[in-house]
Amino acid sequence: MAQKIEKDPGNTLHMKHDEFVRAYLSDKETAISFFQNYLPSEITDHINFKTLSMPKDSFISKKMARYYSDILYEVHLKDTQAFIYLLIEHKSKKDTFVGFQLLKYCIQIWELYLKHNKNSKKLPIILPMVIYHGEAEWGVNTDFISLVDVPENMQDAIQDYIPNFKYNLQDISHISDGEIQGNILLQIMLMTLKYSRKTDFAEKLPGIFELFMKIMDDRRGIEYVEIFLEYLSHQLPNDYIDVVDNAIPDLIEKGGAKMVTIAQSWFRSGKREGKKEGKQEGKLEGKLEGKIEGKLEVIRQMLADNMPLDLISKYTGYPKNQILELVPKTIQL
Image (cartoon, rainbow, N blue to C red; front, side, top):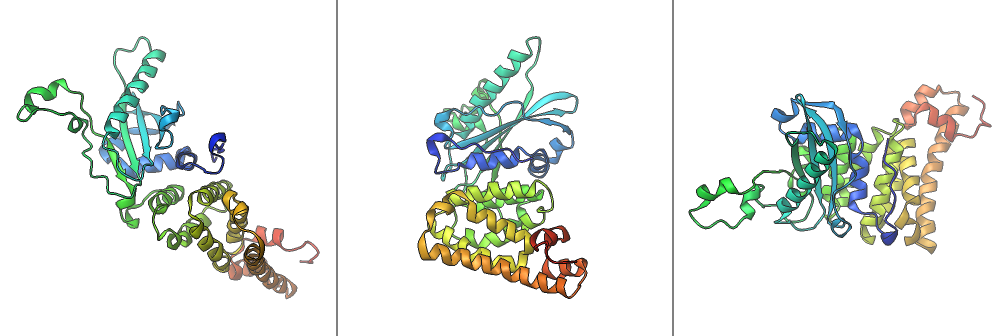
């Protein structure tokens, strides 16, 4: 079930990236899909994903929350307890010292572990992962030791005395769309992060809406649509809001009742509610209502001609249960 989003009272006009990401990756199936597709199979083959849980919300301070999101997952790796620490980098530019941030968070995780496991003789494995969706390519060495200023020709002599680890980096902004894999929710989340700062994001929205249509029959579908649209309405520049406004009524022609649901959620979303006024607002909502009414009129005519519900659903794209909900009950079937 979608995690309910509570907005930061100090920033009520903007939904943060981390609220969007956390809502999607708090879904167990989506988190498992992410790890199975983006961690090496040599590791995932030995993880019992049935044991996956999220023991703590965040290790990130309020000061750093505008730049990062994090989620800690607990799993069984073979027969041992292990953690996957996922850090989502929201800066528009790469952070050279993200490895140092990860080291601090790993230490906090181990300290918390020892607090609750006082008799433990060893520390659990922590697999650090980073999702980055900034404008510039990452290009930062993912080995922690690369951050340490080691004198020339002394690395072999000193490296045994310096902590070292490598983190798994996923630079979402600079992979092809074809490389975005996983279940539907994961694809939607990654596509949104990839394009949310790019000028061609509007061109990708129809494809994202088509992904949503595949899960609209699932009881969770509408929840994740609303989370996505709330994020969209607060993160996109005003020009993008205009593009979405103009595109949604036309998408109803392709999406049927499922797209109607998405469109209605969009026109109720936060920034969208307060952005437009007057004639333009009325024109857009009138266009939307006209598209919906046009669809309903076709359905009414089909029903009046005694066409079976199966055929109406086939030709209009509306599921049978939604046909019955959308058409006034005064129509005699």
